[in-house]
Image (cartoon, rainbow, N blue to C red; front, side, top):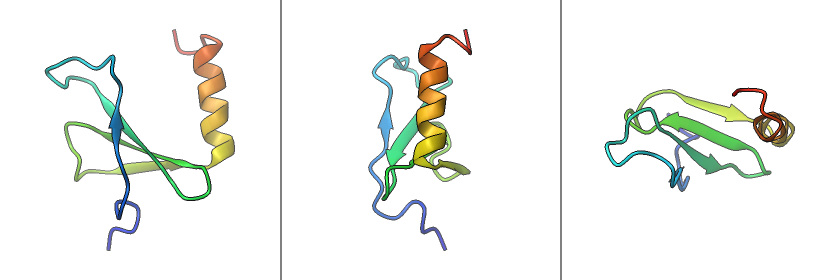
Amino acid sequence: MEPIRSGLVWHKSSLSSAEGQNCVEVAALPGGGRAVRDSKDPGGPVLTFTPDEWHAFIRSVKDGAFG
């Protein structure tokens, strides 16, 4: 059973390398959350985030918390 993957449209960053190294893909979930997976392993694990978790992550990225 894979309800998380059903009907999702996955997007890879335009900044990803052509070789597909170290890339993630993101898909919008119903209700505003997001699903994230490794682009090299589309059948592998999927992480899911609530809208609040996703917005906190994006804010942290913009604030430079991971760089």
